[in-house]
Length: 173
Image (cartoon, rainbow, N blue to C red; front, side, top):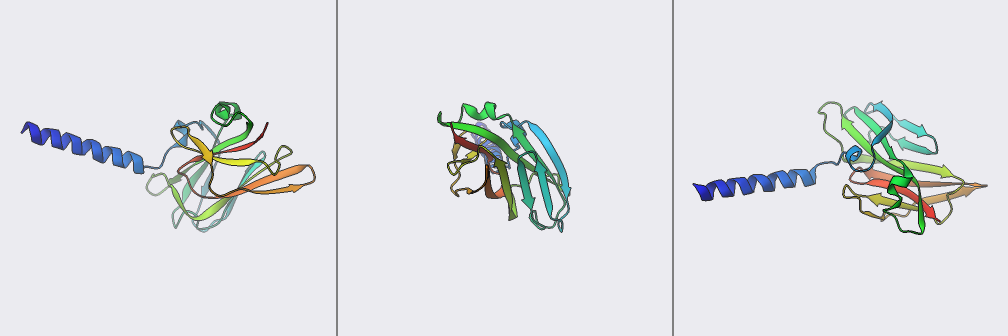
């Protein structure tokens, strides 16, 4: 009986751990505490969310055929500064929290990518787009950002296909 109980408890812990690993992270708990914009998006609705220097273009059907609550999460750039290389300056720190309004579940993968834009006079061809994990590890996104410079303003853009990570926009110091 004792052996059975030990196996049952071990199995339950493994199942719980695998569910936690597979779960979509709620980045309000992992470095992005500020909900700065919220929009309800219907399945057949295009949406553009603009806040300050950042803009997110969300095509219709991005989240399948369910209505969602889309939240833009941010953090102060200085709170992420210690996680990036010393020669980089964090300009913008953000993540998304997307909730399926029919089930209440967080959505982690998109049917279509959303496009993120960030414009600033500090954006140069050397700007970087970095991923952040729930354990605060920072790495270069495997897809380089597109950078356009018109006059004194640079715009970094990047497609986003899901929410397994948060993101940082950095420039050389």
